[in-house]
Length: 167
Image 1 (cartoon, helix red, strand yellow):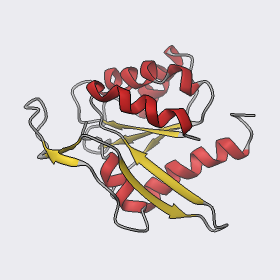
Image 2: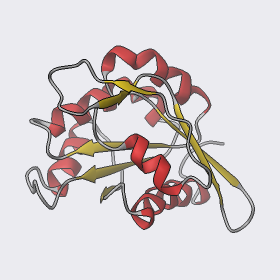
Image 3: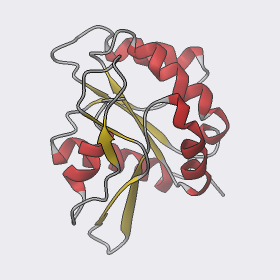
């Protein structure tokens, strides 16, 4: 929660994204609004292919939405908020929830707020992934920066083009 999924989609979407934010009543997090459904945005690649992006709520109580989206996804970006009390524990939640999906689809980890909160480091994320037998790209990202979000998506597409996943 609060890692910037809605912002990331809005940063690259060609049209105003569809967002499902409502007033946040979770007192454990200070953000004013939170996503309770599926956010949606899209953009067109230079070759004309359309990339459709969906953002889910970050709280595990919405994990049923995670499963719905993962079913037909061609790739996944997991955003981590390095300012959270234990971002590696947050990452573990998603690695475990998406364990089967990560066997068959590309994934990139985007770590936000790293400059202001340098611990854990990107190497710590890589070590955590290794503990889960995963080798995934881990990138520092500012979801407000279009080029950062596009790099996350390009990294997914590169994995697909390299034939690393799927049939």
